[in-house]
Amino acid sequence: MSRASEDLMDQLHALTAGTMLSQLQKYRDGLVTDGEGNPLPVPPSLLAAVSKYLKDNGVDRAVRANDDIDKLADILPSLSEVVKFPGS
Image (tube, rainbow, N blue to C red; front, side, top):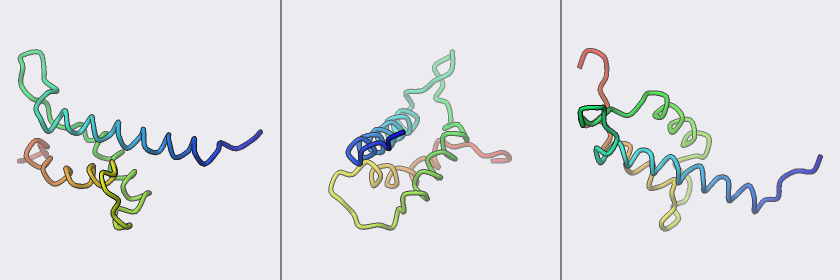
């Protein structure tokens, strides 16, 4: 079996980062709601996936303008306002 091309892998990588970014922004902006219109907190599974993705991709790497990984890392601190932890 042949391996995927580097270009294809780059596209998949960018699509993954963009999708995660889009999902997090929807939660941050209060666009994901329950049946009564109340904003839902970010699911722990999404935060875990984003955290793993960032760790696996080295958030401390060189910054590139308008990179989705950097945008993703930038909005994570603002999510503390919508993430509800047990006992808080």
